[in-house]
Length: 333
Image (cartoon, rainbow, N blue to C red):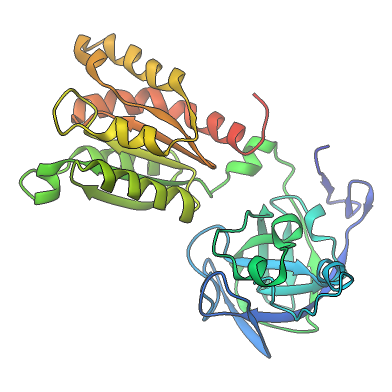
């Protein structure tokens, strides 16, 4: 059921808007570790909790988990402190998973957060899951970006303010579409040739509202390409990776094989459509062996290396990306 907040009656799905308090402020200097409770913390706009390893200019700047969720684990006989699930803010009195993406939370007198994600899969080296045996954060934790910064401390009130009544597509996409661009070329990697296609892709995505999180040039080495794609897909929370180069018949054109090696679900229709569209203008477009598919929640698409082919491919691909992203995040067709 679609979550809706009625701003006139201050109700969420027909119920009074909830309020709560901050039970604890927690910080850690390394990712994947339990956080330690601190007396107070400074939330920096568009960054997160100052001094915390998870802070940064992305969409999961601050993590929140309810004391009520921690209590469920304590009932199983597990001794837990605030911050043990790596939450920045432990809250009290709020059913956090019921707050829709886009909800705005006022903390204390100055801080304003916007909910950007509900839950998150633990990474393989999660210390909390290893030590505790379970992690409630993926099920009941939420993440937010800092719209307005300020000091927060235990006891500060939390007020639910508003959520624009947007469709799933609009709410899910917003300003948190994250992409990376990978150029594959021996000559570009050696500095013997300028990379024109990679910057063109990055600029095109930015104009379409995407945030470019990573941009890199690698030589046409199969293992290096696969390793980089795995690292980006599994660690950097990217929605999209576009590669350029290495898709032809040359002996060092390894991009399709490197991509196939890491994909968990192929998207052959997308790859074939790119070739078909290119063939309308350039018959040799059929010689591109580019692949497309998903690894986890990241879409990977191979584009050719020539600037002209990339220009044509981007004009076809970009209008499809928002719909693809909605589907990847659980939306309808």
